[in-house]
Image 1: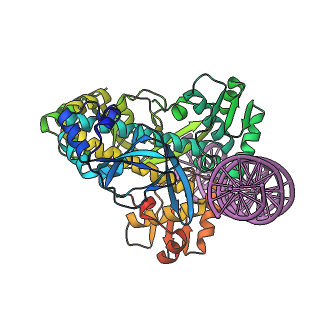
Image 2: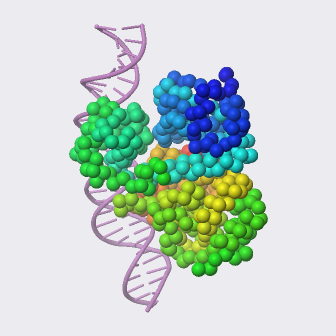
Image 3: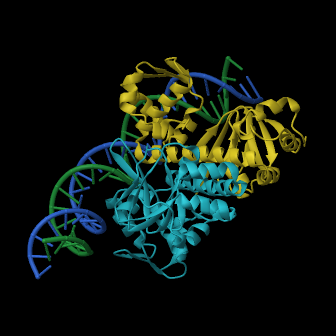
Length: 236
Length: 236
DNA sequence: CAATTCCGTTGATCCAGATCAAAAGAGGGG
DNA sequence: CCCCTCTTTTGATCTGGATCAACGGAATTG
């Protein structure tokens, strides 16, 4: 195993809000103990229930977080560059609550959890940054739960499309970043139902051709979807 | 408005993990700017979307956190003494994602959010404690989401009863701490369905008489409920 | 390029849970 | 103690979404 992150990756990681106001020496100390690996698609990075040995940072590619119980499985979230995942487990030194697997070829940095906890214990700037990050994560999950409990699957899909549309902003047409079967699981429905849900949104100007989605009348779709800042606004 | 928390309440608040290793002077500074109020049942303490002016601490009673969208409403969680709520909104200086109302006569401490953020910025012990608290909150919501996405309503009820049974530990019989209509909402089902779900659990030795639940054969119920540490264990 | 496999779609059917309606309890206040 | 209101329960019905089955299409492999 190659230990020590290549210095060429430093700027990307350093750019993360999480490491922004950490002393240089501490940052490099952290990086020296960590390493970076390239993974092909469909590789399990993490299995839920395992002890959290590393804080993970996705540098490129896509990673899906999923959970399972009693033979069922569901996609909880997807992670995109550049961000960390399973920070809470690392901090609490508790088992992972979710599994992680690569969806595409991905480059992932691994920082030993113990190192993270050590720096956290001594570096005030880092501790504050972790607070901000965790608060953000917490609020995201609360929003996801509201989405699940308050909306029908058709409404969830409509709002998901609007959120994607915002990110890639402007263009009427965009690509789904997620396989449909996984999108279905993420939205809490079956693939069959997702297929029908897309049809159901045709009435509001949504066109689907493969992975390409066209939103022909944003206002009309929004009138149906009724997006709310307290559920759909990621930045707050 | 009475400003300054009565000193008789200090020990309770101080006992919270969150304030445990904070300097005495800082703690008293924080307490002096805060106050304590007694509320009757059914009082709205917080409305979702409002700016988060205070960190709340429940000293006695019960508070329900709920959210609504498009005319629908759902109970997200209940809060019991002694613990804080809406910490994430306070820290991020962001709007509340949930509303809060008292279910019973409750005693609640209110600490100005700005004060919390000030102390957080300077007191390393406090920052670390907030991290632990937020990590705990985050993991709780993830568990709740797994519960929702992976289980049927009957399974959710069965596991809920087992969790309650654990807390009040030992006795085969215990009281529901939540009105049934609210429990239904919390579990993501209708009151009618909850009533039927209780019947459905009779087959596994669950008896219901008003708010009193008897679990006659814990193992049998557990065989059906299949509780998992990664969903039902609150302490990790 | 045929064979295989996996994904997405479509149709038919089924079921968990929602909705609607109404009766039965359970307080709570005058 | 009675009246009013709210909760819970029960029954009947409806429906959103799951499941089952089958097929077309895209990508993958030999």
